[in-house]
Image (cartoon, rainbow over all chains, first blue to last red; front, side, top):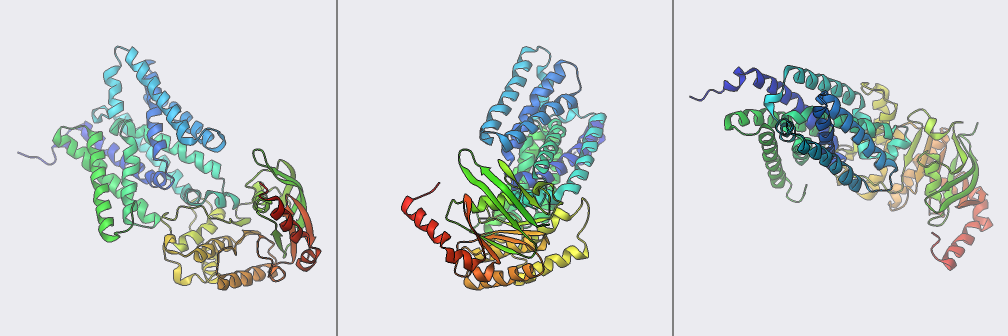
Length: 275
Length: 243
């Protein structure tokens, strides 16, 4: 007999649902800025860059979050620097640096005999791996990011819309840019266990992109994006249990379904506007 | 103390020196017009005063300090071309409210004063009927008025306008002129670039002619009579593109 509450009798599923809720809100709230600043390529790249740090931390027996945080934040700051000062175009720099970091992770993993299965969990996400201390980290990082975004949402919005005038008016645009990159890096790190490196960028982009189809105001866009993020993360996790499927993939597919539904609604309402 | 003091200002892009030793002062309550041919460094001059470009030599002082060290909200800047994403999810009122952001501390909601400044700016630019429209639904002149309104809502101590009258209709130009003269009468210093010399004496207390250097500086009538600007136009015409 079908038991709707069956997944919740397991401790690991309870932990996974808490983590999914936080990750769903975090990714989709920040996703609003990612979509408006057209940073989706950076989100994907940062996720891949984290892999080198994860593999090195694993092989040395060090803490997963420490390794991932160092690798991802350093890469995020390097990207910010190239973006502001560099003579190489941003997408080229991302394409080179992030792929290289990912390749380094794969290289090290392939030379290790014991690492492969564990590390593949980070590539594709594995809810079984979410421990109580993981939940504590996810919730702690989530709260910290909520406070920072609560403090900076206005300068973040102004510099997303019109960075030059915001800077002339005395907003430290460089600080805001770097702060956003570091917050993105941290969000990606805590999301990787649930949805996996390969798929985390979708959770950053898809709910916000769906929200952008339905509203032309910022606050409603962020609220809608969070709603879609929560529905995708919790709904996808639940469905993945019932369907015996990968949690990350199911979450992303549900978010994609919502995106196409929003696209259809928008097409019916406003026939001429495309994306 | 002058509101703006520019001394020996040089600004260099990659290989081109856009400004080669510019000196001038602007006291409070003065509208300074900046004219010159295309590529003469007019916009560069405004960007340097706004602190968006670093001088390669010389200095800019606004209220006695380098522009980047000013308290947030001091400089209101309206660029010539607003290179923004017109699909960005903001209304006219949202854009104008951004003018208050630099002065607003973290977690602080808008004060009564902030709200007043926003509604006064909306009124001053006659945007009341458009305030709740999305920015993609505006004409060129309405967009320009929105960005001027944002700078006014900021209550800046220095206003920089880069060709605000280009591409706007006569009625908008008239209302911008009234607005600027009103702000100047209240003591605000205004620096503004323009191509339109016909009404320079209405707009400005002082006019400078710039072509990498300052070629003339004085009252609009005196500068226009001196022929300095006509001379450049001739020069530009006979020698082609200057950049």
